[in-house]
Length: 126
Image (cartoon, rainbow, N blue to C red; front, side, top):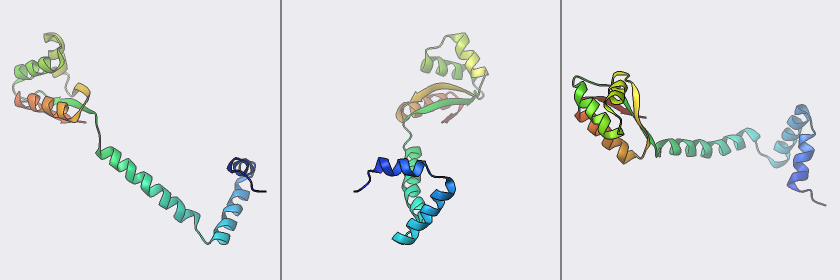
């Protein structure tokens, strides 16, 4: 009679760490495999997927690093991008580094970055 996967997991869960270690050694000898190699083989695709996910970032934050030499133009650009009032935009610009917009698609974030840089600000995308 074959055991189900759940029955096997329950049996393993009731074992001590030392008993599980011995079981792994027995499995390695019986099947001619190494648990360490299998763990690396399984981890590698996950790591590659994680790296791909980092490369394919879909939401960006536009961060004002510094207002630059033309603070008034920077404040105007911030107002235009955010819809903030004059005082709020001025406070944001003077409090740099601060996020101007968050969670934007890449194209919108790059457009906002371009507008702020044209106003003389130093901007980064995160």
